[in-house]
Length: 372
Image 1: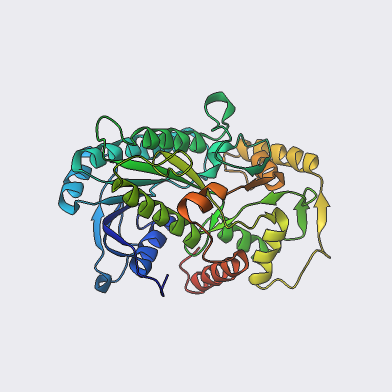
Image 2 (image 1 turned 120 degrees about the vertical axis):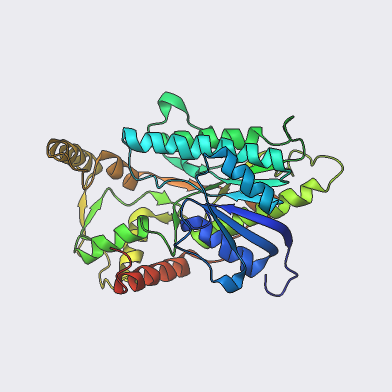
């Protein structure tokens, strides 16, 4: 984008702008767009831009409607990018309450603030997991596939992301605020600098000498997505919503961005265990597959169950469980034609470079004892 005129977005408010995805949205905004940037987060101490960048930071609980309205009235954003969400790493009652509070109640409060203060565009970070029942393969899935809700959805995190997405899309051109345009971005397998989950845990497996076991035949394609590409997709959507707001008539159905969901990936599906080994090689592993012992999926599920029972007895979280085994053997890749056609999306950074950058960041953080 450096050789082109930078798009203008006016005043942009990034909710969750100190989080993993959110701080990359802020970085890409400052690099590729003409705009003023403000951030809301529960805590604004980490991933904070230098003062010279001119970003304004506000600490707030997004379920506090009065505080949100106060900030919105002060900032007067034209665009809101809502990335705030707890990490999806637990499945207990305490986590469920947090998922509901932040993902559903917080999103409802944000929508209300947008409606009350004349926001033009709201872009919401959903998840490609809303289409998964966590047992069936997703093969070249696109936005026409059903969203899995209720009893069919075994992951409560995905249930709350789907509920929040529904609220966001229902708010598009609603009677409460006809000029508010909304859309949803569904990333798959986000990884990159700032990732303390997927990449971090994979690298720890290598560092602990646990790369010799492969569960399943490694015939399952998976979509991982570099975080900068996800941020890029959000901001293309924001541009499209602002452009739509200036039209005198609504776009045709096959052109629409407002009221729509978009899957974003790196457009480079990779076999699950090949991705793991690419991470391990980037972290320093000299191995290919010559040392690998293949554990059948069904055996892995039995061991996962036994791990759950054992750790349940000693009241500790299991080191691995049945869902992780199933996840590592599932096919989950997507067709992103809709994002390509309507948003003009294509990945800025290819997957191999994304892995290199991400692993380097993680190792650098470990050297500085910032990731323990």
